[in-house]
Each structure stands twice: as structure tokens, then as C-alpha cells.
Image 1 (cartoon, rainbow, N blue to C red):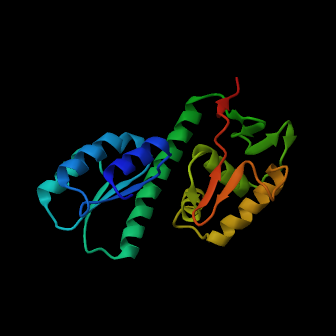
Image 2: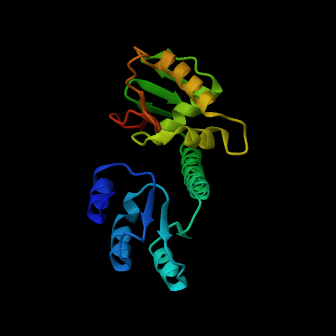
Length: 214
């Protein structure tokens, strides 16, 4: 973003999964005011980059729930690794909360438009027809469902479905998504459910609510 106001507008008008804020481009007071204002609107981590290490300054950002305060110069791979680690924490928390909710709810079937998702038996049916998803396909679809409307990178999908300690590659994700589309979409070449965001990853259609079946 080229200005603090444009950052606020972006967060107000989009689902933002994470944010990197550079203190070298904006003064301290403006940075604190804006980040405190948008903190609850950003679904994932916020990282602040500072050109100089200042202990008191770091505390001010942590007080408004910024996730990490890093001091430049910083190698790009280290910054990306930190972002991935924070995304992993957020994703794990979201999945664990969803599992807790399911354990409290005797209802284990949810619907999204013409899809019926049986969380107990790991089955998905569309208009009453079982799609025959494999366990991994089911896990990917359910993970996308939990983050529908958000663009998820291939690395995020690997972390959320496989876990960082397990084997997985971006090519593996593409293959599973292709198989999912073959089973889910009327026309896999023009998908309506799982769409590709070129250069970023995948996003699940957020036009329909996810509701529990009574």
C-alpha cells in the first residue's frame, strides 16, 4: 500500500489474512492508531518492521496485539519464514476451535448450498449424490470451507492439511484440487466452487452460508 489510508480502505473492503507494516514509511503515532483500528479486521498475523530497535516502541505495538516486531535489516527468507510460522499458529487455532465446537455439538452435518458435509463419516454429497472424496480431498475441501472467501496459498494448504512436519508439495496440492474439481464442479475447466487466484493460490466460493443441519 502506498499510504496508511489506502491500507485502512483495503482492510475495510477485503478479507485480509495478514499484514506487514513498515515503520520506515509512517510515523509512530499514525502507525499505532491505524494498527489498533484495523487489528480486529485482519484475520491473521500483523508484523511490524522497524528500521531501529527500540524497546519501548516494541511494547507499544505488542499492547495493541501486533504479532511480531522485527528490526531491519532483515533477510527476505527470514521474514517469509516468520510469516509462515504465524500463519501456522493462526490456522491451528482456527482448526482446533472448529473441532471443539463440533465436539460440543451433537450435530455433525453441515450444508453449504447444494453440498452436504458429513463430518463424522468424512463424506460429502452434492444434491444427494455422494461425491466419493478421498480422506485427503475431504480434508482439503473442509479446510477451504473453514476459510471460504479467503485466498489460501499452496503453502497454507499444506500447513493446514498436512502440517509442516509432514511431506507435501505445491504440486501435490494442485493435483488434489484438480481431482476435487472433477468431482465437485459441473465444468472443472470453469470452476465455480474452487477458484484459482493466479500467482497466489486458491479461494472457495463464499456466496453461500455454512449452516448446521438440524
